[in-house]
Image (cartoon, rainbow over all chains, first blue to last red; front, side, top):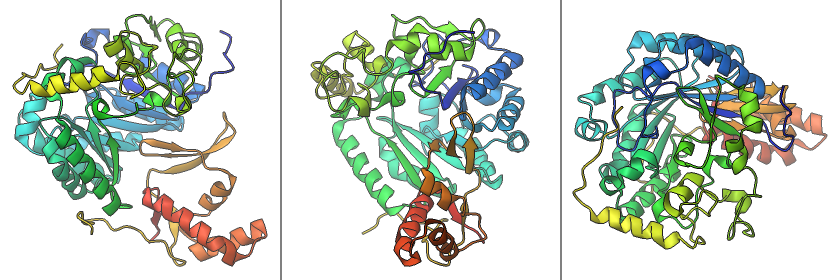
Length: 364
Length: 104
């Protein structure tokens, strides 16, 4: 047994990236550019052990994601185990791989919530972004079946240049599907999305129009449809409170068992990550150097260190600081107080100017 | 002026007669590890304080808001008329977050 670090709280959330395999090839995928193959994935027994340990450590909510998590034939067994430990399970799916029978089995296993992604509201946009034909009908069928089974539904809409004009349509679609929640999530430019920023970045006017639409809909649809709005970083004044603070109350496990403080953490080249195949979830949570690197506020530099907002936004995103400033301990350049804030504005302008940039699809 | 219309769903407006209950797949439980009450729901985790817990525990679907206010008044030795607006507002907020629905 390792000694526990008493200043560290218990984790409540866990993102389980069960596989990197996916029928879609979205150019803003949150998986790393070096994707893992099926043969590198944790086995069923290894995942079940991880979930058991995570629940014992304090995890209350597990997001089953990927890639496409339903490509794992052992998904029911995972949900069953988590449910028996009182852990809330959330399935994050493309909605193109499951038939009614599969969804019924997942519901039977105790699945609590489903999030279905829509790359657009029509087949043309879904194909342009996902490089996948005729996805719409399958996604609609999945969403309908989820509601028929009485499971709460979230529609996830990642927003960028090619679908920012569809925000009102996404709202209408979510309502038609009897969804409980809609995520209008502006693409975060890390990993694949950073590579594709010139082909994805929307221009300022469209972003401003989008904000107006979403704020109006949030007001009009109170108690009817909950709209979570992930605002675009590149046009922000303050950074997002990324992960609610680094290694504060959540962690990620990727398909081969590496445990990370956030899904993009591997982009920070100075960090070393540990694997649940050789160490326990609890040991990594408390003692991993990567987890302890940016916990709390002691690691902060100015202007964060003396900033009254430091407990609010935790200095923003470490991965974005590393990608743009080259130092993961720097203030997130999305913050207007960062000495590098002008650079993020320039990046947005440069990206928008490249009107004809090709999408680079996410591929193994 | 509203631009977006309700569609299939209606906003639940809480009155004295409403019988509130938790929405499907929203659970209130006591977490032994943390010695604290917790509500688990879609994409969110809530840590209600003591007063909130005593209201939420009464949202079983069998009692009306008036019944809930009456039993809270007794528990906290406070006039029902004084606490009623706060209780109603609390339940309305939870309904607006789609955590509480009406028992039919």
